[in-house]
Image (tube, rainbow, N blue to C red; front, top):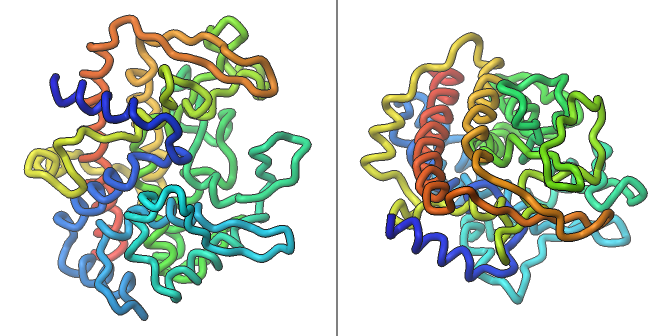
Length: 352
């Protein structure tokens, strides 16, 4: 219990966190390192060969895990050019990106962002603003927690969402073309994407999102057959717990884990049940599991609106804050273990 309280205290110090990214870099490294321990010899050899093509330092799944979040440092200038920009006020953001700081790896990130910037109609700043940054949509789905499975017909899904991105990366690793709208240059890019997005898929608030009315009560966007922008919480990014973004609290992993596998997590990963059906069906299957986990992540919460449209924002309250933190700790550990197990399972299936 003490470590949970200490973890929360650390999070509360982050008054202005970086844009939310599932698990933070520590969680992605944990998932990648768990997967490394579970790879078959052939899969391990393929991973090492693909990740280190043209690379002077040895990459592994642990180091590769944060890559897709590092791409978020690529900006588009007014002249249409792209550039990787380091924030001088937050050099700590670059810690997980150091394996990709060479000129060649920075160029890869810039090229990926450029090819995946305008290939969908993504308007994060509002319907009247120009589209852009489509690769950011690859990190999430926003399925309402009233659902108990993933289905492409549900609101909060689209052809360039998290499940679709994982499927596209799988296709390229299977020597198939990436389906539109994705632009994936080669197997290395696909493996970098896959390692990160499988991690994202196991963070409950990257797959499920509550929709609220003006009184903070749950709204079902599927019953309404459309999403009212005023009801969205963006996977908890528009919700605050005091001065902290609620989504960011779920990104934070228990501090005792560190940023690599532990014996307890690896033991849990080895006990993960095998996925069913064809490999191509696994991303939606795993998303369905995470949606059901999200039922607990949103249980015992209430919301209050603090800003009117278009700057909608909510605050969250808890029926029992201590009990909620305890449950969140348990969920995070289980999801990290499952994420590592499933990443390995997928790569072992591709390269048996």
